[in-house]
Amino acid sequence: MRIVVTGGAGFIGSHVVDLLAARGDEVVVLDDLSTAGAAPRPDDGRVRHHRLDIADEAAAEVVRAFRPEAMVLLAAQASVKVSMRDPLLDARTNVTGLINMLEAARQAGARKVVFASSGGTVYGTPAASELPIAESHPHRPLSFYGLTKSAASGYLRVYREQYGLSYAALALGNVYGPRQRPDGEAGVVSIFAGRMLAGLPCVINGDGETTRDYVHVRDVADAFVRAVDRGEGDINIGTGVETSVREIHRTLDEVLGLGHRPQFGPPLAGEVARVALDPARAAEQLGWSPTVGLVEGARSVCDWLRAEAYGALEPAS
Image (cartoon, rainbow, N blue to C red; front, side, top):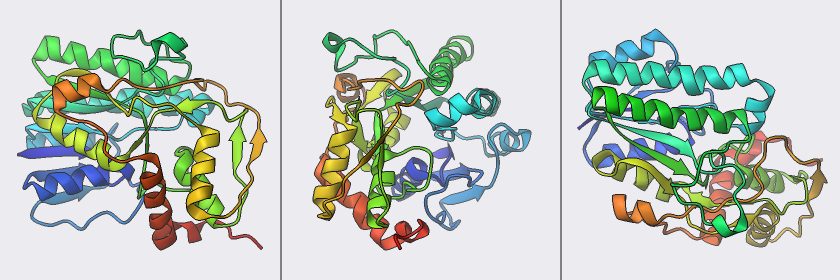
């Protein structure tokens, strides 16, 4: 199958591209390399890279020329903090870029789009009785990032209804794992692990009791590949389990055996208090369920950072 993957050199996208290439698909990657977590895999008979911004016409031209059967849309401005600081930047990538790619997909005759939505932000803060959150929960985003992801679901529905472009919008929990940069704006597992390994302090925003549904990138990549062939509409990709920021710090410290003590800062604007995603529809639609536990996943992050990335951080004196 011919497949375009936007953000295919990034953290999640690079894992997706590896799986698609391994099963024999022909893949075109569109990525501006602004958040690539490792050197992109070299072009070969299965994968070709184009360093392009998804909001630019040149990216749409590549899609139309390739005529993919499916598109996996992972390129995004992915930080809540950045979105609150610069909502125009957030919207340019997450709304304008999305529409540019959907138009290109329609014009190229693609049959399906698989989109990376955000289960951690689109639903807002649910009541305790509503956890884990099902796809039927109303969208009540508290950040501009969550708002752009919520708006994307509407665009995807209209493109399906008006043009017959099938879609699966995978509402992801907090994705973590190897290749996630420890020096970025998002990704608390990688950030904390990188700082611990470099002997630097970790700052917990607020009291550390905010929870997220942490799902390993290996499981997430598997969900995207499955969704190319099956599944329709909004689908949660998570574990159904709440994990607090304090527990993330504690788990990493136990894996590394450092006796590291966190520092505490003010809470973040637009941050949701509690998240856990019901994965039942993913099991039904995709035959998918999570397989990587938190301790195993935390160890995979630490192992990758030891080998590849943590030296980029300023070491302790």
